[in-house]
Length: 317
Length: 259
Image (cartoon, rainbow over all chains, first blue to last red; front, side, top):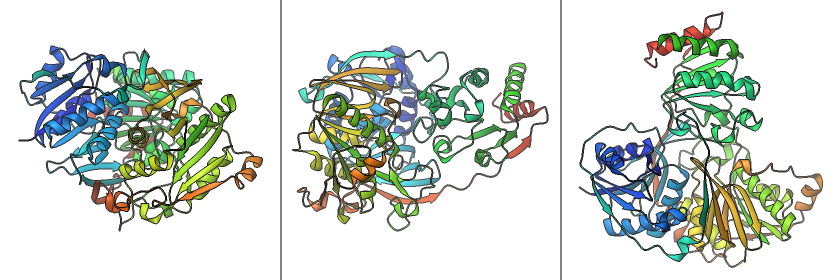
């Protein structure tokens, strides 16, 4: 079977869940071989990736990779496409993932498909576009398929393999070192899960009425171990930080459960959450378009409904 | 400094978008065409940099005839000139071909900075800035939430999953910006009038020396097999809160095994 190259998504030693989703997807196409760029690939990470079927972990850890964004990674991927001739390269639809795939595509003369939500064993990619309103099947027709996969779309499944670690050294050109990282600023995200990969997302919109109103949203989120999201109306008003914006100009989420509170459901917002599996809506306007997406909706004041729900959840745990 | 801003005409952000049955490409006629929202932030950033450091701003677009309106709209914010790559043979170009066209349109013009919005609201790939940087061999600083230029040094903050990275490079560079970088200005009446007189170069693929076999739908390195509208979701249950709305949601969550 052909190798399938998977680019591990991680922040230092912390592996993102999407890495396991990528390895799972790779198994349908061939033998998963993981590329780990930079530091942090310890025994725990190797064992975890092996648990999902990775047979080999290629570790490219050097200051060239850690001090310069994107481009060294793309050179390494392009070099591996040449030497390994993989059946496909799978990366996460993150900023780095997409750009490493983009530059590798140009370097290696390969087609690229972004934001896959499913990959069939014949290489056909499913995308959910225009805010989930259209489902597209497509294929790369030139070179090694470079496919970026949207987090939380493919269900990771265990398939034990023993992963062998191989340290690789690939020369990085000066052209790949034009930009230097001079400081990495880690913003405390607290105990909540990462928005893009959270299994449950609780969001607030215009109806929350102000920054202080997000207290009830956060309390509900914490009762469900959920990430907090916000509509553009709320982030533009400065009630909640921009990085939590869900929508066309923000993050795209696809959780098992999405609870929309005080969000009207303009296209702008729906584009970022329409593929959520179960949607709960709380809004005082019965005419709000978000109710069209609701599996379960309550027309009512979120400031009475949401705290009651939070309290009920606490009772039932 | 000489700054290029690459912009794209996209269907109105608030409109329903669809694909055309015959070509599997975006149906651009079904909705109003507007300047891609994220590109407005790139234009604003260019204008602010030129206001602080002197220089000129050139708006660059590739698109059909009606993309000229979008080009003028961007110029009316205060830019100095435009370049419109207009050629029917480019229709259906994928990101790979689009980046080749833009790179050709930009090269050899001594731009210190080439700015982009971080994504288009229609295709949402976020790959064109990286591809153009790759083709031109230029420094790439993408997803910037802050950009400072001091002489030939560029310092920027790149948004990451965990916060942001501070990046340093030397000009020239390709930069893409995110929406929190600034507050784009509205074109003034004076700007709108002035934009009508600003020079716009119209170029074909042949003018750019591009081999016709590398552009357009026929040259795409990926192909759509089929597409379909997502079946509408079956209507859910909507109740009106009469005092037990929260409890009823908890019941629903219990039944569906979330709690």
